[in-house]
Length: 268
Image 1 (tube, one colour):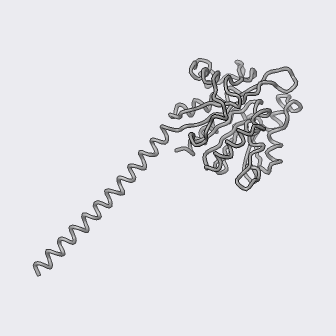
Image 2 (cartoon, one colour; image 1 turned 120 degrees about the horizontal axis):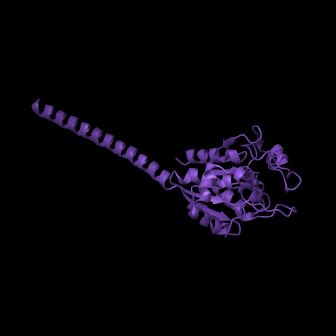
């Protein structure tokens, strides 16, 4: 009996040891996953795509990107450790819409931008969109302003870039007029990317309020509906953001930080 008891004891020890090793391994894997998540949060690489277009139709006035729609998400993401690259179709200086660079349009984020020489240098020296590789980034964000209605809506490089991000199931985010960049974007089946998806963007009534309905080449709300998007909105100028899968859209400038927050949630 003693030899049998000894064997049984040894087996018990071996099983206990095996369980201990397994538990240790699982704990290590959990810790490793936690560390990986932390690393992702610290090493987020996000591409911002701005317009290169600076003419407001035939009005003789200037346009470009809306400062708040860039600055608010920029700092919300930057302060969380994101690495941000800024690109435009032409590269070089990205035009700022003069209407967005006034005391009346100022926010805490725009005031911070006004004092931020590093951010201003990036805006003055953007990368060329054609040189950007979606594989190098975790997400893409398009700030608005009226400029995208003329260039990004029809830019084949931008279209291909969004389609690539989407095929990789990475977050693709747009605010205000920036959903214009989705006008010609298709999904894997060749259908409009927004078809059957919940989306928002600058409303027809907001466009009428700024008296540019007859100036812009198309209305964002109408385009999203015509492409099959399930469009919805809140009151004019109220913050409103929708997410459908990896697609994030915001209604107006006041929605820009909420869009950034949604994007962050999808990168954690």
